[in-house]
Structures are given as structure tokens and as C-alpha cells.
Length: 363
Image (tube, rainbow, N blue to C red; front, side, top):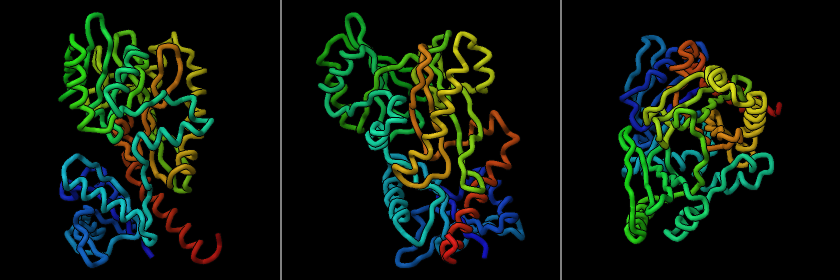
């Protein structure tokens, strides 16, 4: 019996090329492919309204269908009400025992840090992180480190990330908006506290000391590693790339205009680093982190792991994303487009086979 796989997305009508590539590979995997929004579930039924890929005609067709047994969550949420509603519906779907998600995602940055800091193999790679629960806490950390980063606990793509720095005669605040670096200098503490109090009322923020990840042109950089499970349910590295932000900047996100280069190119351009040591540290992290995440939280299918390589050659886990974008892979390795499209289908088939064996009592 063919597996029925549904792609959950907030806007099925504006399909990504990636979903179309998946659709055209679905026939060889014997997968019945659907795409729908969590907001398009039909109340009082087990059905949804969305798109179904017709392998005979090779096109997507609008249909009403049973909620597929397997689901691939590619929903990216904003602060709007539809996003909040969709997030609740997806959380409800993930609780259902009759449905299987390829990956169940990760909690927010606060919960992630709180759990991982208790794990000895991982905690040395985690920057100390404190909740920004008051202006006093932020000022305490700023006085301690002189330069800190404020990031939203639920943030993604570098949104609402702030750099705070103590300077002679004041406090310098910087952030990135629409690809441009915005700065504001506060000469008076009370003015800064008023601004900060307003900001903390908008989001739940985390505080981290600013780690020196500037290259020789004073540009921030980090390493993104893309991992996926294969057709046997084993983690494989798809690619890795160095993301470099603007001069004197804060962010390294591609969505914020960062440039991208291969890890090999970066190694050749930085002979002053001990690359044998760095590569071994990176290998150690990616060999244990996915399993630790699944043991601590829930099953996963893919991961984007962001590592910060500091000037003193220490390695830090900056962020972990359970819904990584495809842009890095498409830019660095366009020849892997087919592999990327097949991966969810292959893993779905693996999950179906495991489920069949469990039902048959062979596991």
C-alpha cells in the first residue's frame, strides 16, 4: 500500500520548487503526496482541503482528502494570528497517535538550552545563556561582559537580534533591519532603560556574551551544517558552508544578506587556524548531537546546526534548527537537488516499513 505523505505549509498555493521536485520523485517511491495548510483542516472530519499530486498527469490538483498518515512539517510562523492558530493545530496533530511526523521539531531556545546544558557531552560547547527577565538582568550581564547579544527565545532568521555594547560615555545598541545595520547610542542610562523595557515587553529574550567570531575583515562568520536522515534512518551530513555577514555586522543569516562559501575554501583562506583540531571538534559535535536531541526531545528528520568558530579557535553551538532552509545546499551543491527531493520520500518509506514490521510483530 503506498505511503500517504502530507507536506504541511502555511501557503500551499505558492509552492516551493522543492515541493515540486518531491512530487516528481514521489512515483518511484510509491508515495501519494499531498500539500495543505493546518488552517485548511475541515472541522468535525478527519479531512483537509489542499493539493494532491497526480502522478499520471504530473500536476497538483485541488482536492478534499483524509489527513495523510505521514506528515512533513514545513510551516514557518510569524507573529500574526493565522500563524498562532496554525501552530496550535500542528501541535495538536503531533499529539495524535494515528499520525507520524517525519520530524517533531525542537522546543524554543530557552527550553533547548536548559536541557542541553545538563548533558556533559554537549554543555562545554554551549555559550552561557541567561533569560532577559528584566532590565536589571540585562545590565548585570552587560556590566559583566561589556558586549552581549539579545536574541528572541522563539526567533529565527536573525529576526530581532540586538548587540549591546558598553562604550566610553554610553551604550551602543545595534541591530539589522531590511539588510541594513542600524545603530543607536545612549548617553543616559535612564533613556537606555526605557528603550530596553519597551523591547523586553515585546518578546522573550535570551542573553549571551558576544563571542569574537570576526574574520580579518571584521565580518562575523559561522559554520552551518545540514544533516538529514537517509533511507535507513541514519544521520548523514548533506553539506556544510561558511556564512559571512557584513563588515562590522551582527548576523550571518543568508536571509540577512550574508555571503556563502564552502568549508574547504574557508580552510584554505585561514591557514592560521589549527584545522585538524577544529575539524575533529566539529566531527565530535555532529556525531553525538543528533542522537542526544532525539533522546532528550522527540524524533527528528533534518537539522541545521550553526557553529561559531571563535578567534581563539573554541567551538560553540550557536543555534539548532529542525526546519533548515535549502538555500545553502542549492547554492553550494545544485547537483544535490534530486537527493534533497528524495530524502523525505525515502525516510517516509523507511518509517512505513518500520511501522509495518511493528504491526506484524517482527520488531
